[in-house]
Structure formats: structure tokens, C-alpha cells
Length: 384
Image (cartoon, rainbow, N blue to C red; front, side, top):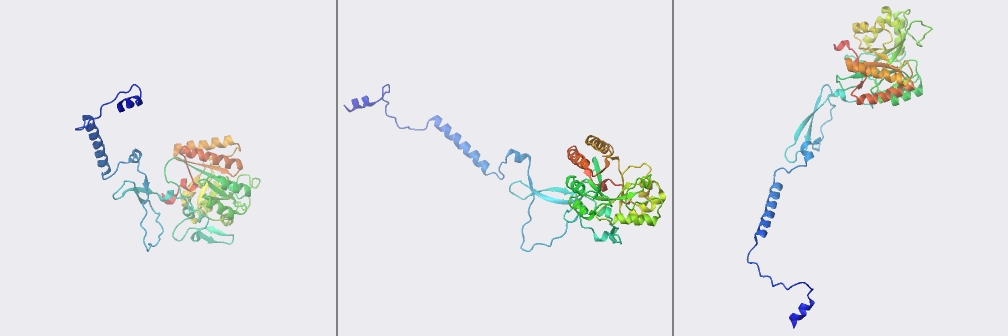
């Protein structure tokens, strides 16, 4: 009777299975599965117990360097100023897991280190001579020159280099402020001695990373109808009178590497006038930047004779105040630099010039052109 009730409760279509007999041994499938599991466990254990674990594929291809920090000590050693006379070797540790660090070597060239902008505007007292009109640049007792001390560092490479000098700083206060703020730090700035607040603008320019030069008014043809301004050096003046005018211009500020002519086609072609002027620059350790406007200039030969670092401009970039014309001149500079290694452009601190140069420099860098200070392309007779 009990068996009949169970049959009634069982769903239709299902038959009664006989009771399962206890297995006397493991089936072949069970044994195979067990062996496979043991094999996987064994391989995983072997990998885990290796001396060095596997790394991610990207870590195998590239090992990211990290600087190894020196262990802290209770009594720190005295701080010493790093030597920058030559390249420095820095050891860094690479990520290689356990074990002693494997050091890589990085060479740092001091010429690539930027200026200390916090003190770039402070003149070196050893390079200052006191005069009635103000501080005059001079060689230090140890032979250092303003040309060397106040130069902006650069990479030192021999690729295509372009130096750009923008003159007329300090004439317009708003224009000067805009030029210093907008122009890339690699662009050299030239100050007009007749300008106002030159000391303040010099500090702003140097703290922004710019190398600077001082413009000196020299007599042009058709003087005084064409007049460069106050205290112009002339061919009829005596050497002493011209040196007095030169000293006035030089004492207007400090921290510049050299001087650049403002006009001066007649003066620069006269050996009696130009000779004492160039000799004074050599005595004081200053460079001479010729804007390239006069083919009759005696400056190259006299600079070599008096040991004056010399630079000649290749072109005036903004003789025509038009953006397209300025860009064309800048592109010509780039072509010249690629052909001979470097090129020099000279312009004025017009708003259009400043804006055009600023945008062009950004693009030129992307094309592999290095923008360098004027001192980087100077021919220095004292360095051979």
C-alpha cells in the first residue's frame, strides 16, 4: 500500500531508479581531472617561489628610473655649493625588484641649467666701477668679464640657432612692460639710454630670464638732421668727449653683456672715431653687437684687434611693420640658421613685432630651431 502512494506522488514520466551502489574505486575521468588540478597547483607554486617574480610586459620593455634618496643621518653633512665647471654625473636607481640597485648614469651639462632668476638682477660688485654718472661695467680683478657673468646659459649644441635682439626698451613704459612679459626668455633685449626707469626695467627683464645689452647712439649720415638722441658719439668730437658720452650710456644700468649701436653708419666707418670706442669696450669686457645696417662698418676688424666679442645682425626683421613681412624675415633667419648654423635678427619693441616674434618662436622651437641669447653666437677673440 505504501509503494502505491509513492507512485501516485511521483511526477508523470519518471521511472523509479534503483538505489546507487557504493563505488568500489575512482573512475578514469575522476583520476584525470584530479591529476590536472595537481599539475596547475604545482606550476603556480613554482612560479610563486621564483627568486624574481614576472613583471608586467610594459615594465619589462621600459624600466622607469627613480632617484635613490640618500639615507637620513642624525648629523647632516655640511652643504656645499655644487661645482658647475664641467658636466656632473648623477647616479639613479632603476626598478629591478629585489637585490642591490642597478645604477644608470645621467650626464648633466651646466650650460643647460637656467639662470637663478632670484638674483639675476643683482650686479656683481667685482664688475662695477663707480663714476660720476653711475656704475660702469669693468673686468674683475680675476679677469671675469660682464660678457661672461651676465650671459644667459643655453644648451651648447651645434644645431640651427637663431638669436633675436629687440631694441628700444625703456622708451615706452607700457611697451617695455609688454615686451618683457610677452617675449620668450631666450630673446635678448636692448635698452635705449634715453629711456626712463631703466634700472627697474633691467631688473624685470633679468628676473624674467632675458639677456640684455645697452644701445649706444652713434652718428649717422646727415647728422644732426637725423639725430639718434642725447649724448650721441660723433666723428668730430675728441676721443675724450666720445668716451664721456659712452660712459654716460654705460652707466644708465647694469647687468648687460655688451652694447649695440643705435644708427651710426658714419661713426662706425671712421677709424679715428671707432677705434677708441672699441678699445674701451675691450678694456671693460663688453661685447659689441652690430645691427648690420651698414656695410661700411669697421667693427668686425676692430673688435678682433681689441679682443671684443662681436656679433653682426643678418637682417632687420621689422623694417616693414606688417605681420606677414615680419614672419617672412623670421623664416629667412631660420633658413640661414639651417644653412650656416646660426642667424641674428634685430627688431624694435613695437607691439606688432613683439606679438609676431613671440608666436613665431613658439613654432620655430617645434621645428627644431633653438632660440639663443646674443652672447651664444658671438665671435670671442679671447676664446679662439
